[in-house]
Amino acid sequence: MQEIHFAPLQGYVDNAYRRLHSQIYGGVDCYYTPFIRIEKGEPRRQDIARLKASVGDGTPLVPQIIFASLEEFRILTEVVKTLGFNRIDLNLGCPYPMQTNRGRGAAMISDIATMEQIVKQIDSDCSTSYSVKMRLGKDNPDEWRSLLPLLSSVKLNHIAIHPRIARQMYSGDLYIDEFRSLESQSSNPIVWNGEIRNIGDLSAHTNAAAIMIGRGLLARPSLATEWRNNEEWQHAMRIATLLEFHDRLLSEYEQTLCGQTQILQHIKPFWDYLEEEIGHRCLKAIRKASTLDRYREAITTIE
Ligand SMILES: Cc1cc2nc3c(=O)[nH]c(=O)nc-3n(C[C@H](O)[C@H](O)[C@H](O)COP(=O)(O)O)c2cc1C
Image (cartoon, rainbow, N blue to C red; front, side, top):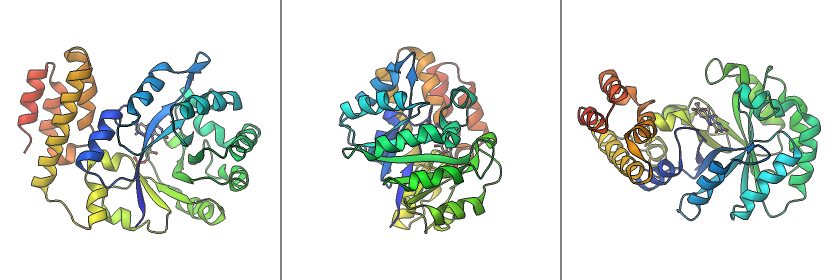
């Protein structure tokens, strides 16, 4: 059976979310960190602190890095390897101008000169297995065509493709024909990433080496395990498990964060993609809650 990967989702899938998701739901073979980046010439401290804190927590985790140059790549891979990781994911997909204007993320798809240096470095590093997560391009859906032969010249764990261009951000039509063309030309395994919401969507991608799911798992955290066990969870079971997941996450945030404002800031996004599951009124009450008491009250209305 194909592997299911939980896509990196900055602001949603943190250490505690990943660990509890894997303990409570399972069904996911591999999780990724949000991208780790260079800030003021060194690896961003909070990224490294979070990565350090995840070591040994039992969740199958791949750190993801974003870089603008061979130098940034070297600094980041070194620090990640020092923490004991031998799998690293490379972000060639981030669409945000904050990163692309610095030559990172989706901008790296067409920076062939830098990617030649990176590929050389990957090729000479036998201790680490690399994967790439990319879009089809930054501005055009055929940008991948110049990069793919280079990526095919080196052995990668896989290339995960979100078949959009950066300008589309996270919505709009998927370029399926370009994806198929890329898939047929790649010498590395291709992982599908994009718009998987239910078991039917998963079944449409049985040719892919693995399937990476982001928002679909936020909206239905049981999706991977339902698919794996070929068993649809009824609403009552989904809600009961969701509440257990939420309660354990909230209790972790209460132990590790300081003050109601911070705790609410971290826990409220948990519900952002769950409107279909809990209803509009509940979600509105959750978002409106300004104290933990009010927040808890709102949660008790979920049925
Ligand atoms: C809020 C948010 C944060 C994201 N953070 C990252 C990230 O740190 N690294 C990355 O490679 N992709 C990131 N992505 C992209 C997702 O990993 C994924 O490629 C995208 O959501 C498409 O997959 P989906 O349709 O299954 O959600 C993010 C997407 C969203 C919506």
